[in-house]
Length: 489
RNA sequence: GGGCCUCUAGCUCAAUGGUAGAGCAGUUGACUCUUAAUCAAUUGGUUCAGGGUUCGAAUCCCUGGGGGCCCA
Image (tube, rainbow, N blue to C red; front, side):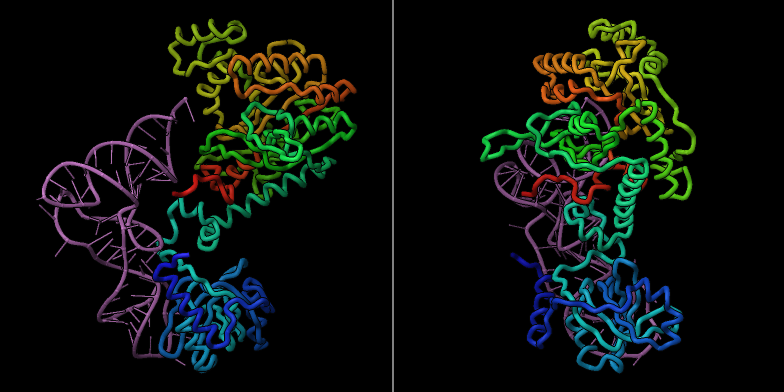
């Protein structure tokens, strides 16, 4: 390992400490109070003259005068100022603090609490213990660390110096735990299903492929958990959910990371209308618990989860915005002709369904700022959803859209094994025609349906995107602790 | 995958084709109420990598790499 000048200086200090018989990485720490507890009970502890011991990382610059020094230390709960005097600490440790300790070192400090002349609650230190020597220097103290690349590659440093980053990940954690609680309160049971799957299914996406050596078998990292959870519904569990990582072999952008966290849940004897109610309740609860109100601010836009959500029908909205009635133009070539006639700026797609999706994505979805259920998807794009009884071209499906962002996908599940088989065959033809996101035939899943699966409503929610909304972050990588980046060199 | 922008000291940033600099941090010294401490002095560079143009390249050109923004 090659050390730069600043690292070498810190290493020299570490060696000096070792030479003086001090372990720079002792195995144990002592703490009578966290820093937040010191502040919360400051008056009481000060009046009692209590001797307290706390610990934390030296933050900001040390301010060392001839016989007096100041520094702030931080633990997860907060910051407190240390007041260090040659008189209280003794020459040896005062000089050690001055000469051999640095910003970012982690220390344990014992003493009494008092306010300084300027009124700042401080720990007047009588005894100092080094808990961990930092060999890396801090970033610039005023501008801090701003370089996005370094913030993501060295997320630990980002967390040390940026309270805003810590806040984002605390919020993300609460989003997940509140979601879990809402589901548990409704009687959903958390389950775990395979990450390594012999057949990938449940979504339209390209998989990562891996290999089991002993079985000499290719396996796929799951792109969804849908088909396994519905096997459980067929098995008789009536409410199940799973929160976990999915993997899709796709590009990285503002709203996509190759591995991401999905919540999926399935409820027997329910349909997509019941699931809409669940989604409304979930988001209303998240907003209320995280902000105290039903309204959040995302990228400058107020978003209200109080009311029931608007419903936007894909064919109706496309007709309104483009003048094309997709239910009248149900083949690819005539649809593309109509697009040219109307002079619409969308890219040509290889199938009617995808062309419809493209029209909607360009001309309707960006306008959907308030929480909206997008409904009436083409059956060709929804091989696992039940058809509308009144319109066989469309399915009982909805996507929750917030601030123009798709945050999930839900439908009345297709439980007819014969129809399901036909849908898989259709997907197989699409794959053969070059659609590398088409879904695979899963005969074991059809076998499960052949035992009978009750009418069921199902839902998938992209938890990273929900975390973006509730932490007001513009990109998914800001809500993923260690997002994917290219290797250096 | 395409277009545009960007990469200089540990960090935040300058430097119009002509001696690579500042602030902070660090180091040395002074200082017993500081908090972006102050005062004085001072160290620190493969300018992302490789090639080219030029008397001379951080700067212009080419190739490659990392990152950002927009588009697909």
